[in-house]
Image 1 (tube, rainbow, N blue to C red):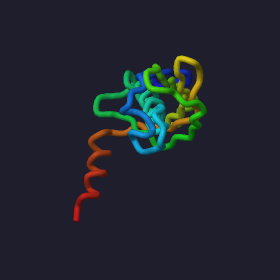
Image 2: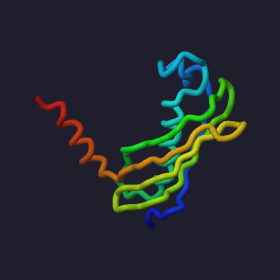
Image 3: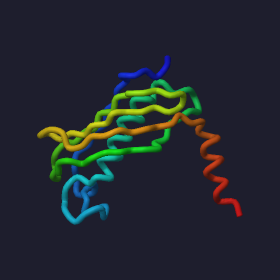
Length: 130
């Protein structure tokens, strides 16, 4: 199977005191933090690819351009949806959107690259060499 335009993924969570802006330090208010919204979007994209990866293969996020348009209070369910909009070799581009129970809260685009996990980790680990 190959990765095709239109492939979709989804990820969801509930806003808790631990994933708020004031808890992570990205703001001073107890609402769903933008970094967590971004993680939810990346997770939705990553999840979409999982069934299409060969053994030893993974994906990494390399670019994300989003807006966070509406605050979500503690206790509400939030989710992100990702849809493949382009495939260029190992580069996969997604349209990403985030929602809470009242409607859209954010949107944008996200790029991921397919990697060979061992080779990727070897390259990263070499940064520790002195």
